Length: 115
Length: 109
Image (cartoon, rainbow over all chains, first blue to last red; front, top):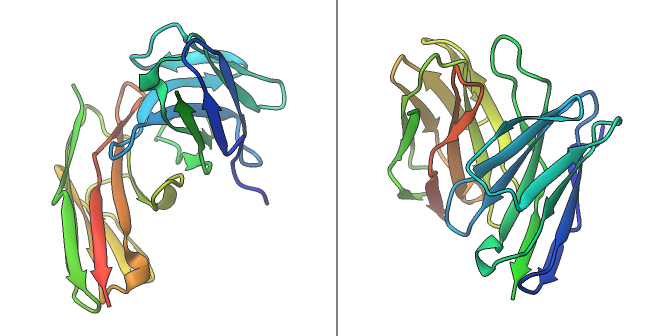
């Protein structure tokens, strides 16, 4: 059973460019969450997708957008890249929480460097 | 606002020297507390989920416990391969996860 997978593993972009990161959830999961983790910091919540809709969003600008596909995979898009967007981007999958919180399983991350 | 505070920020142990990591939380309507292990440059690896005060979970040298205000991750006779950052994460009534900043554990041989 494959866990959460992310692509690419590493990416180098220049300021002003746009980037798309991809995530495939763990088998059986229907919810995908995205996080940004700067060096030495804990993950910061970007947004969560369920049933192809953005269900929750953290404190990130509209330059950060996403999409979920019918097969539950997801994309994170970042426009007009800034130097400060350099980070490890983590995708986590889970079942949609209805009662108790559902455990989120993380992928290996995509390391983005903006020059 | 929900808050999760982990202590200490960093802990250095000798191999075999048992200790505990602390996670104090102020979360409205706790619906789950999670412990993850994260190695440098990698995604967090799930360790435990705790749902209610008094609950305990064990896995190899690790044991997680939960009270109404805090959680402990006990490490018994640690080995160098236990070196990592340990993250405490809480899910509250707003259905959002709040992350602690982590404890960087180093186990020397």
